[in-house]
Length: 286
Length: 266
Image 1: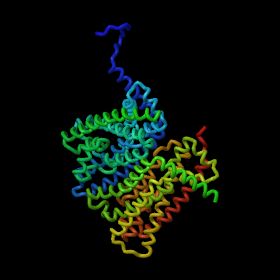
Image 2 (image 1 turned 45 degrees about the vertical axis):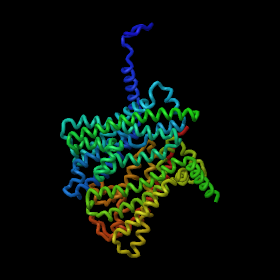
Image 3 (image 1 turned 120 degrees about the horizontal axis):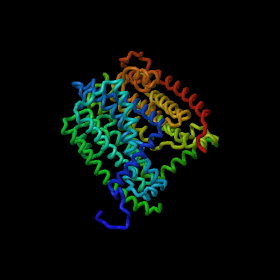
Image 4 (image 1 turned 120 degrees about the vertical axis):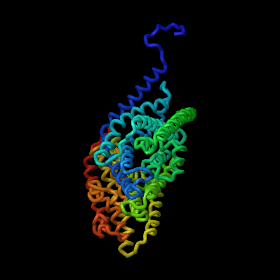
């Protein structure tokens, strides 16, 4: 205590870092709890993920069967199986689709309430989103993966560090995807109706993240460009490639590093856009 | 006559509301074309990795995906909006639909006719025409008729699937994305030759639910190719029949659903 003031010394001294961490944790917990209440939608969504898992898995297995040497783009059949089923599980965790909350709040004007809160709006959306992702990891990730294990013969990772690296990669994928979703939704500050950008994002995210086909099926120059110049591969393709050990260890780690760079850049951009948007919102009169 | 005017007014209102968000509408329209192009591009990308998929070459696969794409997009354009039914049921907006002296199904469709999806259909038809040229088809009167009828029959079939999966909301309000497994899932299933799939999953989707008759069997009939799975050649010509059965079933379920509906609104 190097500062003197009139306050009674507290047992737990004022620690801004710890308190903001506590706030962050509380927000994340609330995000988790909110999704716990959507029980039936969770079951329905898992069913749909599983049906698409069967569809995509059979197509990629047919590709593997027809390709020279049975290894299209360097994946074997077991790796492609894991790619599909874990991809179906991750889909909801990284939430590529269907998040329009911020856009809706902007359109209705409710977003002004976010500005009254003593939390930065970007953090105010990021923390509950991590809670949501935690819920999805428990309840939406597991069912497709289990079904894939029962009906197919998926690849199981062999390197000891693949598991932890996959966990980090998924976390970065969630942060990155939340960043882009925030930006897409924030276009509503300028357009009022963000439906166009949202549907563009839905389309781009699916293709460029590697949901419809592994990005390595594309010509090399295109795949590399996508990886470096856009954040999209980081949402699905990178975590999946890390898990199925498509590359030697140094490349595995480098891909996650690339994801981290994109996550930081996107959050910074969110903060910038939010600052601009707040001025814009005042101009509208709320 | 008055009824027709009412429908026209609904449609006109839709059009005006679209024009008030012009930038967003344009982006949406372009993206929708992209979505259809993507279904076809995905097939090309798949064929970059392999020369044949389950014994089918690229031109044959493009024919199958384009038949599926035409059927799906025509259905999606006309009745695809019905999948919003769950929102209407949950919010009680369905009450407002039912008290009006117009057909519930027609109103729901016209409440949000997706003009943005119109260009998709044009693109899908274009790809089909190219696919028909790419394959060396021996044209007979029966095959010409088949090529004309199949996209329409497929659209009726997908329309029935849209109505059926939307009707689920009458009994299970929180059904969420469940319907997509059959609408969009059906589109993805019909985009590839049926021998790609295997086991009970193939039996269920291709024959149990009838998706095999949307694009795969008719494509075989057009190409004059024997079915590796052993169905006779006339199987390609029954797709209109399958579509009619599906439509009849959908009509029954829809009526039962509307009768079953209990408002949730207050």
